[in-house]
Structures are given as C-alpha cells and as structure tokens.
Image 1 (cartoon, rainbow, N blue to C red):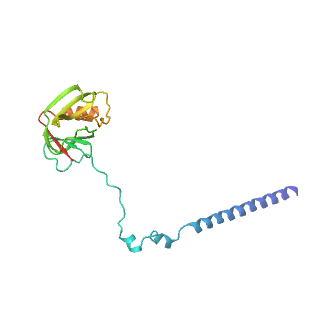
Image 2: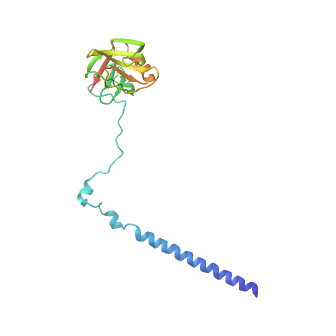
Length: 194
C-alpha cells in the first residue's frame, strides 16, 4: 500500500512538470512569433524609400577588386618599367605587354615628370643622397639637378624621405630591387605615368 502511494505521487509530480514545460515552450513560441516581422512587413521597402525607388535599384554585387597586374593605360608598348606616381607602384612589363612583377614603392621628394625615359646608368651599392646605403640603383633621369632612379635600402627599410631634402631615390623592398636589377638594364624604357 505504501509503495503504490509513492508511485502515484511520483507520477503526479512528473505529470505536473511535463505540463509546466509544455506551457513554457508554448509561451516562448508565442513570444517569438509576436516579435518576428510579418510577410507584409518584409515586403515593404525600408523607411524613407518609395516602392518604385526600391524596385529600380539593382542588387549590389561583390565589390570589384582591382587587378594590380593590370598595366596602366597610356604607358606605351614593349619591354618597359612603368612607374605610377599616383599609385606609388611599379610594373615590370615584358615584350608582350604583360606585367611579370608589380610592387609598391616609396617615392622620392623630387618626382620625375610623366614621360618616357631610358635607364642611363646603374650602381651595385652606393650611399644614397639621404645617407642610407642602397643597392641595385637603376637611374633613368636627372631632374632639377637630382639624379632619379630606383633602389633598395640594404637594411630593408622603406621610410618616407625627409620632405626638406632633395632626393631622387624611389625606394623598394630588397626582393623587388633584385627583380628590378635583373630586368632594367641600360637602355630599357622607363615610363612614368601620373
């Protein structure tokens, strides 16, 4: 007799707990459905826009990524070094018009005017006009009395030059300097674009 009383009271507790759990789940489901936007709300344009304006806007696709190997227009033809003043970037372009390498540079304080030049001289290792030891110097112009060319600091640094000094070294990383040295022999065209 005593055992059956315990069994009945246990089953009553389980039934009560089950009923409470079902009620709690039903209440939470009701709250979720009450806060979700209706189908009509989802179809409405955002506040401040008319349906016509909303419908006429094309869906936005992924942002277009610029191809850094795309050689700037108006940079000539044939084998050449292209230096963009605005992009602070150099392209080494083969005879088929394809960039074999491109890289960022730190411009000199004296910038060359846009135009077509040719590599006139080269030096293995020298001290630059800013006092930094540089290697793989490829000169293509003297402008305002300042020799202008590409080089890489032996210590691998690429600091911006002191704006008060007149320097003509366009600096690059050492690996890029190695590539420039192999590519830009005396006589190779250098095209400077805005």
